[in-house]
Amino acid sequence: MLLIACPWCGDRPELEFRHAGEAHVTRPADPAAVSDAAWTGFLYERQNPRGLYRERWRHLHGCGRFFNAVRHTLTDRFLGSYPPGGEPPA
Image (cartoon, rainbow, N blue to C red):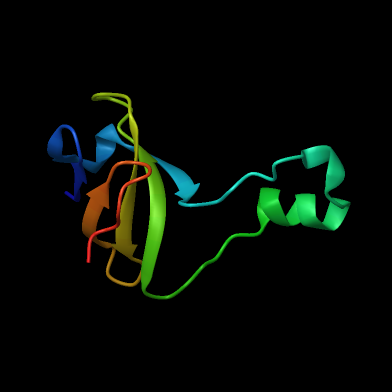
């Protein structure tokens, strides 16, 4: 079973978590002022790299908090996690 490290609860089984998409996606300050193409890009276009990827996760069956994690998409190995607004692991 895959273990994911919650910054507040420690290592827990993957069944306790929910993936919440790409990390560090910033919502436009004034959504009404952006074009339809830019709004579509914000809603649907995400990176899909081979290798390291920063993701947002929620510890649904634990503390309930959101956090960010760095995961290698080819090996599915987590390299670390950090609170929102924090610095990613080296």
